Length: 449
Image 1 (tube, rainbow, N blue to C red):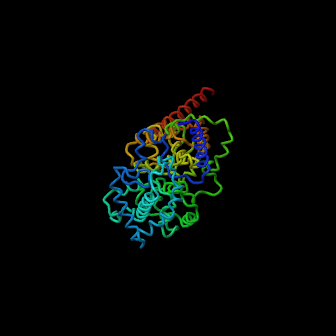
Image 2 (cartoon, rainbow, N blue to C red; image 1 turned 45 degrees about the horizontal axis):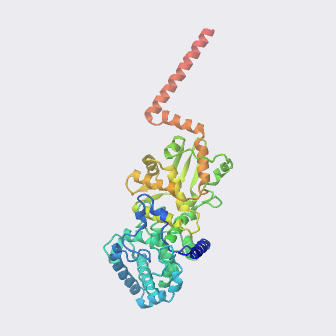
C-alpha cells in the first residue's frame, strides 16, 4: 500500500471515530472484541437458534432458524391483514436510509456485501418475525409460534447485541407506533431480572399507568436491547421519594453529609462477610431500581439496600450483552449496568457472600452453584465502569466499616447473645458477678464497723 493511501486511511479513521462519538444514536455493530475474550463468557454473545440482521446471517448452525423466521413473517402479515409484498415495499423504499443504522465497517461488511435487494429482504423477514414474536412469546401459549423449541431460547437470541434490528425497521412494518412501543416495553419488562424474582418469563406487564404514558411520549429506543436497558434503569422510579439523591449520588439524604470527609477514599473491606463482622448488613430494598441503591446507618451499624436480582443462564446472557452495549464506542452512557456488576464484584468474594444475598432475599440463584455466581460477579473486576457511580455509598460504608465501637458491639453480641444458651450463661455470669460484688461490699462494711 502506498504511503499516501495510508495517510488517507488514517484521516478517514479519525473522521469516522469523531462522527460515531458525536452521534446521538449507536449503530448496529459487533460486540467489542474485549468482551469475546472474557473467560467462558464469549459464548453468551452468539445466537443459538435464530439470527436477526446481517451479522450472523447465513451461519450454518442457524439454518433451521431461517425457516422459522419465514413462517413467522408470513403469520405476521396475515394477522395484520397485509400482503407480504406491501410490507416488503416499505423496507425496499427506505433501504438507503436503513443502511445508515448499521456500522458496516465495524461488522466487516464495508464492501457492500449485501445488495439493496438482499438487505431489504433480510430486514423484511427478520422485522416481521420479531414483531410476531412480540405478540406471541408467552409461555402459556407456545403453540402460537408453531414451533417446538424453548421460547426462552428465542427470547435470548432477540436480546443479543449482535442480533439487533433498528427501531426504524420495526416502525415501518408496524401499523401503529404507539402499539409498537408498548409491545416492545411490555416484552422487555418480562425480561427485567431486577423486577422479577419468581420467574422472568411468565408475569404480565404491570407498569403503572403514568409510567406507560411516559413510555409513549419518550424518545424511541435504538433497538430492542436499548429498550430493555431503559426498562431496567427506569424500574421502580415511581416509588422513589422525591428530593432524594439518586444514581449519581447513590445515597439517601440522611447519609450524604458523610461524603464531606474527603479522606475516606481507600476501600479496605473486601466482601460481605467482612462488612457483617463490622455490623454492616445487606437488605433487599423496597424500591426496585438501580437508581436508588442506598445505605442506612445507625449508632451501632448500618445496612446496604440492594434491588432483588433473578440470576439464571438467560439473565447472565442479557446482563453481559447489556455490558457489551455500554462498551460500544458510539454509545454515550454512564456504564450503569457495568458499574452495578462492579459494585457486586466488590461485595461478593466467596459462596458465603452469595448465601448472605440469598438469605436476605436479594438474590434468587437459578444459575447453579453459589461458586458460579461468584465467578460471574467477579467479571466486574475487568469491566469498564464509572468511578463516580456508587462512590458515595462505598465511601460511607468504608467510614462505617472503620468504626471500632460497632465492631466491638457486634463481637459482644455474637459472643454473649447469639443463642438462648449463651444468653442464659451470660445472665448467670452477670448474676454471680453482682452477688459476689454485694457479698464483698457487705463483708467490707462489717469489717469497717
